[in-house]
Amino acid sequence: MDLTSYAEWAVRLVNDPRPAPGLRRLRDELASVFDAAGDDRAVAGRLNALLERYPVRPQLSDHDGHGWHLHLAEDPAATAVMGLAAVVAEHGADRLGRCREPRCGQAFLDTSSNRSRRYCSARCASRANVAAFRARRRNAS
Image (cartoon, rainbow, N blue to C red; front, side, top):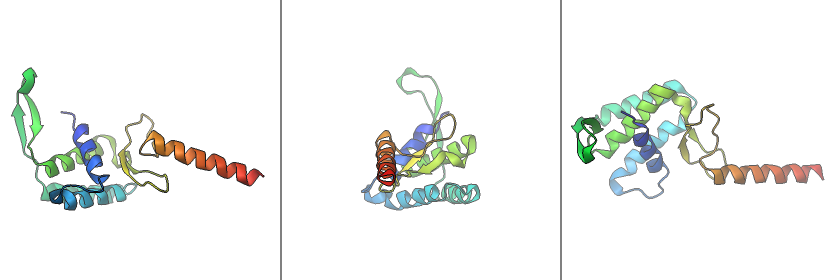
C-alpha cells in the first residue's frame, strides 16, 4: 500500500491558505510537523500525537476492478496524518521540507533520489537562482 498520495494530500492542505473550516486545525497541526523538519524526534513526536488524535481505520476495497486492496477510511485527517507518518517511517523525516525561497515557505515532500530538494517548485527554484545571479552581478560591479 503506497501512502505517498496521502502524504501529498497533507502537503496540499498545509499549503492551502484558506482550507475548509473543519480542516483549519488539522492544517496548523500538520504545518507544525513540517516546521520541525530537521529534528527527527520532534517530527516523530508530533506525528505520534496526531496519530493518537486521528486514528486510522483501514478498509478492504475492490472498486474499479482492481481486486481487493487496502484503503484508509474516508477521514481526511487520519489519511493525511497516516500518509506523512508512513513517508517518515519509510524514507526518513528529512523528506519533509519547507521551501527555501525567502518569499515562499510552502511545505513539500522531497522525493528526489539524493534528498537534495530545497524548493517547493521549479518556479521557486528559478526565482531563487535568478536572485542569486543578480546579487553576484551587483557585487561584482
